[in-house]
Image (cartoon, rainbow, N blue to C red; front, side):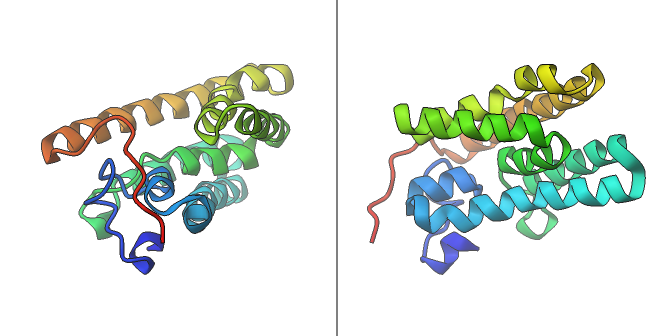
Length: 176
């Protein structure tokens, strides 16, 4: 929705993925910020609903369902994003201490190197940081969601190959 407002079809640009990362590459960071916030809110709201309805394990299941729904949305003919920000939003609710530490790592790496590296370091450091503050079963649940992300990336890569889009990064479009 953010990209359409700026006249960009993310399915036809960059890596063909309609997620926040491709939006950032095509529109720039500030214009894509609502996509990052919205994608993260999907996971956070799912986690909160799951906590209220079924406790901690139900919350992780709700985040997994939100991630799958984000990656394969019915209204977009099952062509969605890779669900990384959906995971980040859910993980922020379910492991707030570890998430805050990882947000700090993300910020530090972004300042030192780039946002791309900051996002990767912040996301992939979560289970390691969780080991310091959460019970092992919660770390395992987090790792299962990260495995889901890997499966969604593989699915997106296959879709991109079939549609002829680049599977690596994509050059940013000129920004208006």
